[in-house]
Length: 158
Image (cartoon, rainbow, N blue to C red; front, side):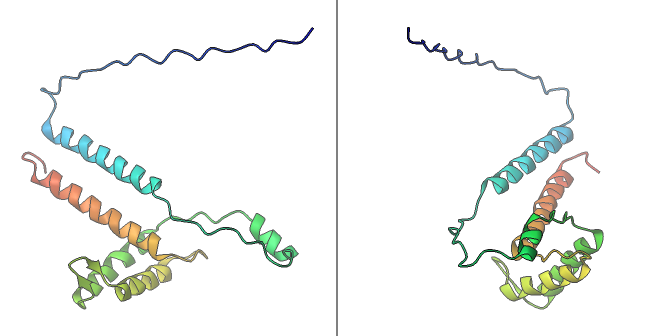
């Protein structure tokens, strides 16, 4: 006698519900702060969602050496920004601005090269910084500055 397969029914979709919160007795500065945090979270999720196109893998003509295999299996170095790296980034961006290496649309390529060099000098690890990493941190500072200005403009803040 042939075996019969059990057919599983799909679970019903969850019921949608709406929660309403009365914000009338909450300080407007606190609401602005939570809105700013929510926008930062959306900026972060948007930046994580963007991907760069990848090139197809082309296998090498010869097998990897033992040293190459050891390097590939070695744990990656944890990278984090130090206070000295933050200072180097901001100071060099200011210097490049004073030198006229900034246009209306942003900093020129040669300015970013100088910034990367300064931040790399401040970094004590072996990781090689990329322009994307440095620009990303610069964009983060720009977003934080906009949030600060928005909070500072609210009456009763500071």
